[in-house]
Structure formats: C-alpha cells, structure tokens
Image (cartoon, rainbow, N blue to C red; front, top):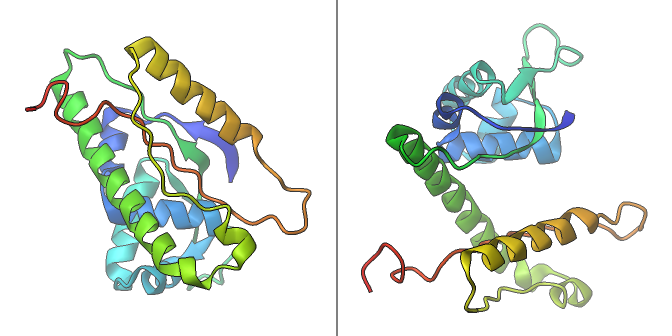
Length: 189
C-alpha cells in the first residue's frame, strides 16, 4: 500500500459513501491484501456482493489488484492508499455537500460498529490494556478557530504516537469526534 492519502473528488466520495465499502477498504488497509471470498467471509456477505463493491472501489482508485498474489483463479486486492481525506466542499456546491454528508454518515456507521465491538470485547482484555481504554467526552465552550486548533493538535498527537519499536505494541484505535453540541447551531434546541 502506498503510504499516501487520497483526497477524493465528489464522484469518488459518492462511491465510498457506503458502509460495506468503507469496511472493506478498512480491512484491506489494516490487514493487507485479500480476495473477495476472504472479505465476504469476514463481512458476512456473499462473494458476488463483495466482488461488486471491490470493483466500485477499484474504479475510483481506492483499491488495486495485487498482481503479486493469486493463481489466476483468485483475484487479490489491496488498498491503494493509507488514508482518505475528505475536504469540505464549496458551500455553494449543494450536491458536493450532500455527497460529503452521505460519506460522513457511512463513516459514523462504521465507527459506531467498531465502538460497539470494542465494548463487547472489553471483558476479554488483559487488565493492563483495560486501563488504557476510555470512552469519554468533554463538553467545552470553543470558538470555531479554537475548535479547529484543538482538533489539529489532537491529530498531531495521534500521528506522533506510533510505538512500532516496542514489543508489546498492538494496533490501537484513536477516534476523534469533535463537533458542536447537536441542536445548538443550525438545529432545533
């Protein structure tokens, strides 16, 4: 996988705005190359549906065929990039804004499922790992500029936190959700 970030166009983002495709792309990014059959088993889907979604991801540049694997019968796929960065569209472009919103709905669906699995697996964690887990929130009053500074600082901390040289390091998920309290701006109170 290229250690790059892809910034999709609205058309590309529309193709990615599907929870199954986001899950598949996530599996390929985290676990490495896989076949449609392998992904189907992991996601509880049939291989025909998985193949369809892989073709959609490939058409828009999110995945590529892994030609170093397979035997002609099995087609292997890998993620083309390490991450996806969706930019805020021009406010006048209503269609692009709706596409971004649909993508974010799919992202939140996948995040929510991941959080649920993490809570379900909490009793299985060694005590040392349980102490590192938190499901917390903080309600603070911020201006838009300060809010952006806080989210950027958190992203920098997360990016600098890699601990690859430590023997007991594992993949550790940091999800940052930062938003105005629902119902306070643009919604009903």
